[in-house]
Length: 132
Image (cartoon, rainbow, N blue to C red; front, side, top):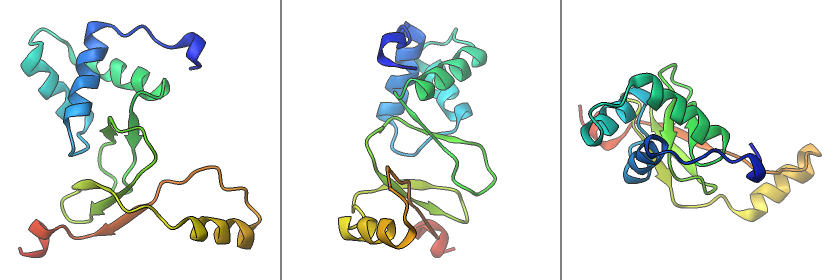
């Protein structure tokens, strides 16, 4: 969607977006539904799922495929950032340390690609899983 066709921000969409902005755990659609229902008990699952799709399509939210075969997760932080994902439990957190600009330039030079963006995912075991 372009800015001229931006979706109307209905109360339901705003509630979904508010849940995403308040979440730092990259919830699944089912998690978002459960959290929105706590605020708006009458909201239906289909409305939440449609709202997520519209918010992602319009650039208000990100849909993350974390490569672990599980359900997609959602992120209200649409600024460019990376993630570290636990291979055991699926937990994902934002990486605050950006990739060095020189590394992107080198990759572009070495591959011939004009790099227009990237989404880097580091994988490992989170502290909770590492101790179990």
